[in-house]
Length: 265
Image 1 (cartoon, rainbow, N blue to C red):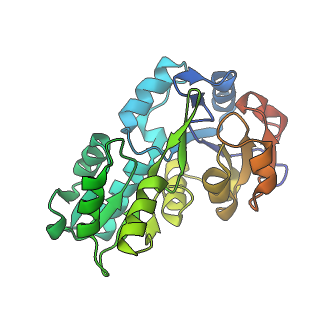
Image 2: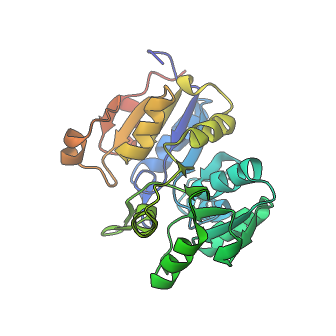
Image 3: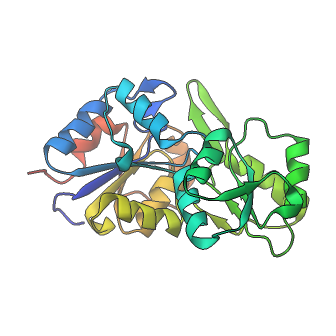
């Protein structure tokens, strides 16, 4: 993007705009400043256990008003992809009610019968247990597409982290001997395409801001975006030093965003 002002900024949510139920200090002012300067602002979360209207409510309550049209998450991306790529097929889902609701809203058929599954979709599931693993094992054969909403190992919460989608995927891979076919959320090409549609401008003219190297920064780098890693979430200095993925900028939190963005008009 060189030294020209950005046309759009795409923010991760958990660990970037907020942690748990607490707003990251300075986040509201950073978003307000970008909007006041005419920069497009969007939000992209790999969290698939909420629908977009829940993100709207949470952001509004934290003083960062946002329209649902400015928000993408792994559930909405997965639902849109399945509606396009697997129309009329039955999807066996490992996940939580908001994911099922998003799939239904996009006209995607789901099944609770592993024997009727045309596609297996795996996401974070707080109720994942041996019975869930057995059903997933029976839902996937050699030719069944094996998809995941996101590749995150953990999700940041107040006071630490909890296991995320990759934990469920790993268990199913171990049981079936199958490897995951495709991730649909960050950093996948599917998510890049969705982000392009969301911002409506070339991603090379945009900035990706997030706290996770292997998803936020990796996606931004692949898409030719300027990438900004914040240290307010899951990544610390040690993890950054150990990673092969390099952000363009590293800041403590979004409150410092104005120190690395090109001057805004």
